[in-house]
Image (cartoon, rainbow over all chains, first blue to last red; front, side, top):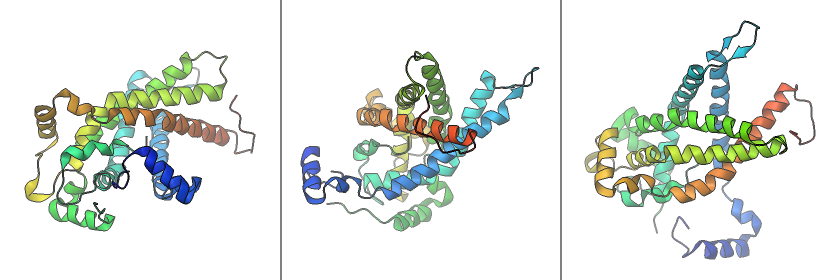
Length: 117
Length: 158
């Protein structure tokens, strides 16, 4: 579809199924799979770590996260995530919009199929 | 038909035109997407999970709340995502359209109005529910395994 070989999603699906069976729908899965493994680990991992960092110990010895602590954890996670991931998003955006040097920005959000979350 | 440029070529081009700053194009927009977005994401997950009646099993609650939080995240962050993508897909060098984050918002608004910031939202939302249900499902399950010293157990969170 994205390469312009088919006129409709159903035509594309029919062709893929006839030629390659169910398996065809998963071709090229390894690369997004790997990147989502890394992305999810960074996201959930750093969020858990920051929650712990910003929580305080109550009088009865339990760990508690205040509202401010939660906001801080969310923002810190966002910062780590963005810093690690921004270059990959950049490449992905360029690949999905299919132009390196010269391009047509209007086609851009066809690429909306935004990976990773 | 368009041919995708190989990743290394794209990287080299971006670097040649803008160095590290070029590689990090859209960084500010992405920060504005992620930081408040995470609050919405994790906040709506927790709220939804607690709000779902307990006669649903724990697994069901995690999956429903996870999907819901993904939808909330994208509804809330989509305009910033559009800005990020427009900046990252901008031409390199001379033909550059946006001078920066604020300029990109201004130009997009002038050209397309408010609607421009929501282009492509529908497929994104359709995708958001199942992917985030799966993400939170996997996260909670792995966390459960780790908290229980990785003892093998049947697939139940209930």
